[in-house]
Every structure is written in structure tokens, then in C-alpha cells.
Figure 1 (cartoon, rainbow, N blue to C red):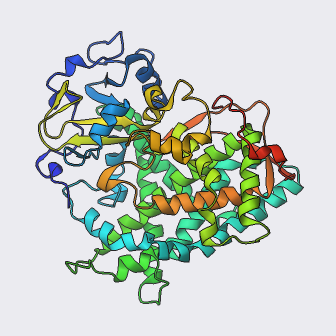
Figure 2 (cartoon, rainbow, N blue to C red):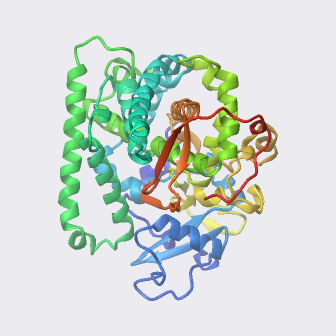
Figure 3 (cartoon, one colour):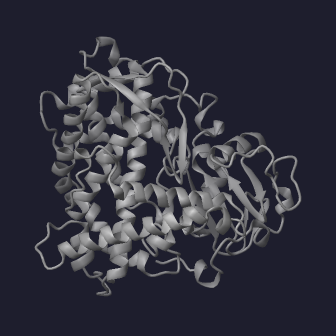
Length: 494
């Protein structure tokens, strides 16, 4: 059922004092300055990591203010579990998500709760992520992965390091484009990123910059960036319009685009409008590859830093896949340790690092903080995933065995949220997890991953997260030692 709170609330940013009557009870950074707020010590280029730093200092709920914008942040597990209650809270579309609406409109990710198209699109497209549909996508995922390994084989033979984020972006863009829309961007044949990727990164970066600038200054400070953003959005629209036009009137393959064009809602008979189809395609192309490429990049970083964990994962791939050159769909889910590596990477650096929730009606959060209807908070997923009360004193360390079955069962619910929460959680999460597990398995059984000696993990923030400047050296893989079947020694997260 569509959520109703947004239908009676004003659009645009709503500062915390409008919805939190006892805001004074929530701590904020020291040295607050009138008008400009909590700007001392702030790092404008890394707002997420900045908020994580303040979260460690101020506790599981805190607030920050800058140029008249006050935001309440939550990361404590108990509070986050309350916010996951769909009877009391709904998705809040604000900050960077709302900044994407000029291009994504009422797409699945950016629609306001009162807009009907997100539910219509969800109901029409959900069968596109069924087990049967996923099994149909699997051969195309393999074909794209083979284009990646062909490229990496050439780089290894030449003794060159590979640009992991760039190549994972090519992989995931081609995967969602081919499986969802029957389109080939030719990413692996290009020496530079496809213009679609350049435009997409531009719109995400622009949305992030709008978050941290005071509204009156943005038109002046971002004048040139605003023009570039308009050009980027126009390019995204033209690309998708051409893709859709090429499909109309042809016999499709039953993919997501066919569902958008040909499928009516099973109960109401409604169909997606041409404008909404464009917005959904952009949403899937952007969200369907940007976050997965980040997840794969972080996982490969940690594998290169933890050779014992990588050896244990290779042993599992050898045991489960054997000599099969192209693993079958069912064989991917059997890589349980590889999947735990992916989950642990998403725990430390969820590539969608926060999500916003708003109160449906008057309520009290944590028994202490009253909230009016529409009052909202930003849940810092990357800090929720580090709550020591849930994850232990070593929460900063990389340990995939946090996700073995007994450990998962022992944790309270709503403590692991890399795909958001509730009715508006990511519709493509199983697609992303299958793709990423498959790719990690293929790369692990083919290569030894060696980090550059001086590299230290740096996080690029553009609404989503990506390891910055990550390059790995590839070696032909060696047989996994027998000791790799045991529990490896865990070191720090980096």
C-alpha cells in the first residue's frame, strides 16, 4: 500500500526544528556558531565520513546544523530498529535523493510516498527479479564477466595493474544494460568511461554538492556546475529515449524493458507512462550498476589485504564449482563464504551509506524524543554497521565470519541494512548479490590479487561510496593451501 505521509507535507527540505519538539535533548558538535552552525572542523568534500566522525563523538543520535539546515542523525541499533517499523515510519525522500528528482522523477528510488507510480512500477517489475527471471539473466552475467576477465588477462600479461573501480563500473553497467534492456554500451572496448557513466557521475556529484551548500549560495557557487548538470541530465534522457525507441514495436526478450512497455498492473490494468518508463530505466541503469560496482570494489580491496581469507574463498570456489568452466545459476548461491565476504564488505562500507525515515504520525523515538508527522532523520548505515553493542569491540575489523549462520541468528533484527529498509528497500538486491557473488567467484579462481604497497583506503563520496584510486596487481593464481580451510587470522579493516 502506498504511504500517505508525503501527501500532506510540503516538498523540499524540512529542518529538524519543524518536527522535533525536544530538539535540545539531542547533542550537537561543540563550537556551534550563530547563522553558519556546526561548520568548525567540518569537511565539505566528505560529508558522510564527517558525520561518522561526529557520531563516534556524540553517540547514537545527534544533530548537525549548517546555514539554517538542521538534521538529526541516528546510528544506534535500537533506534534504527524502531525506525524500521513500517507502521510508525516511512521512507523520507530528501537531501541528495530529492536532488536527483530532476532526472529520475518519480522513479522507484526517488518517488515521494504519495506518488502512485512507485507502487505501480514495483508491482509490474517485481516478477522481473523472481528466481525464474534471475536464472534467465545468469548467462548474460557470465558473458559480461568473461569480457572483464579477457581484459584483466591482457593487463596481467602486460604486467599492468588494473583500475578496479573503473573496471567494476564497466562490468556492472554492461550487466544491467544487457539483462534489463538488451543494450550493449561497449564499455570494455573503450579506453575512457562511456559518456553515460560520465554523465551519471556528474549528476550524483552535483546532487552531493547541493547537500552541503547553503541554498542562497548554490546558484552562485555552482553556476558552471549547474550548466554541466543540465547537459548531463539531457544526455541521460537522450540515451534512454533512444534505447526505448529502439525496442518499441520489436519482439523483446521478456526483460525489464519489455515489462515496462507491455505489462499492465495485474489488478488495476494500469500501465507505466512513457515519461515514467524513461525515469525507471534511468533509475535502474544508475542504481543498478553504481552501488554494485562499489560493493565489488570494496570486496576486492579487502581480499587483496587479507590473503588468508582470499585463500579460504578460493578453496570454496574450487570445491563447489570444480572444473566447471561456466558455473550454473544454482552453483552461485552455494558460495556461502564468498557471499559472507561480500556482506562483510557491505557492512563496513555500504555503498548506499544512509537512508532517511519520516514519522507517519506523532510518535516518540527511543521513549525520549518526540516526533511530529513528517519529522525525519537520516540513518547512518555505515555507523549502524559499526555499533559495538551489536558487532563487538572489533567492529572496525574485516571478518566475514560475522555472517556465518549462527552469528546472524544471534544478532537482533534490523542491524544490517545495505539495501535500505521496508517497502521501499532496493527491489534489485537479489540481482546485485547474485551478480557480485558470481563475479567474485570467477575472479578468485582465476587471479591472485596483490595491492599496491603504499595504497591506503580512501573513500570517494558521490551520494554512493567507492574506494578511490584502487589499483590491484594480478598474478596467475596458485593452488589454495590446505590451511586455507581453517579460520584465517583477522586484521584491521584496511
